[in-house]
Image (tube, rainbow, N blue to C red):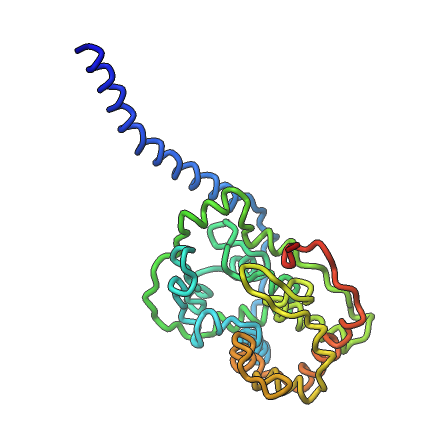
Length: 301
């Protein structure tokens, strides 16, 4: 009987130990993922000028439209819940930017926009800050000024939450956070001393097109999505390229480019002729440049 009782006791302890071990496992994943998200260094505080003019706010509105802020955060910056589109990631929220800009200092907004660091000092995950790394101070001021000026449209949004599977990939280093991705964006190759048109075109491309086409604009294949090398623009005439950007229609009257057609009509339709010409000149020049190897956005097959 003692033997049976001893065996029963060990069996009971084993049963009780299972939920404890599972809880400890979840706790470890949470702690490790939080440690990873908090292992970032805040940039120097960004300072806004005390007064901005209407032209600056209008420039900010143009940036918000052409760089995709309205596409993710809503046409009135009211915030959007992407949880159903990004299944398995948890509760993924693009916050109410008009409200956010009134709740937090410009330094907090700049840290999120250009560095991928949230208001709580932790690395962001879904905000494409790599797209804004090279945004100039002047344009950053304009964008923040526009966000601050926008009326707040009330929107009931759930609190963002990472799924456990996403926390696992962050904790193990399998999924980089936004600060890591920002660090991977290459430097601009051109400066004010170079061809002004090419420099303006590179600036636009590296603050817009690199969101989808790889941080170096030479194409990307990851997460089951492939986007082309933008050197392909050399195959377009300027008129065809203008039509692609403003109408989402490619050579051969192809209007089913999926995301590109949506982005063109929603963002790029507002581009000026000068912006399109600058972008065309720069992207066409990529055909003469080698494609960088060993980059994370074009992993080896």
